[in-house]
Amino acid sequence: MRALFLLLFLFPLVDTQAQEIETDLSYKYMFASNWDKSIQTYNFSRPFLTEKQPLFMHGINGSVSYIFKSENKFKQGINASYSHFSSYAENVNFVNQYNLHFLNVGYILRHESTGSLKGLCTDFILSASSSALFRNVNNEPFIDNDVRSKAFGIGGDLSVRTSYSFNIKNKIRLSPFVQIGYSPYLFSPNTEAVINQTTGLVSPNFTDIFSSQVGLRVRLRE
Image (cartoon, rainbow, N blue to C red):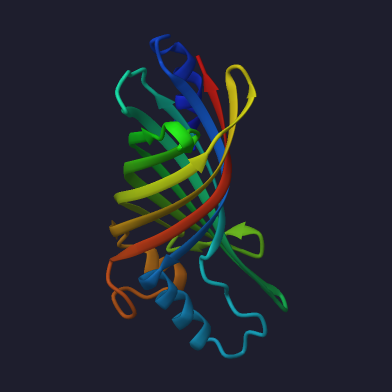
């Protein structure tokens, strides 16, 4: 999260010949098969719970992008994004919550259509991805063996984003967009331990992740 704010601060200081600075906000859906298995095992092994622990499915995403000036049909840029997912279950005298954070930093290859399709834009985004998972019990950090329960992960992500832009002012455009992404391998060896207090029993120390997003981008053109 701190890295995202740092990039937000630095973008205006980079070469003034940049084509665009952009920011967006979106709803994000996620399917992480091995992490789902850990939560499902958590629920199965605790049949006394009235409210089951939800899977990591629904979250929010915010990102900033910096597109470099180019006369070519394809443009290049850099992107940083932050995502947050929460799994919250409240039972009698027991509130359990997992907070999952992602920070991605990557490269954008952009194609902007011309002619009758002007305004249509497609981005291919290749990113390094990092994750951090924390657990709270009864609104307090969960302590396991005298340390806070947490899991960190690292991997890669490939996304495709399609948007259509509407001019608001001369240098400001709004762009509704849809995006799909896939992380074939995100290494996070302690995730099962945080979720289910087991290691290597339910799932391997990695997961693949499929995601989709729907949101709105603000594009500031210089």
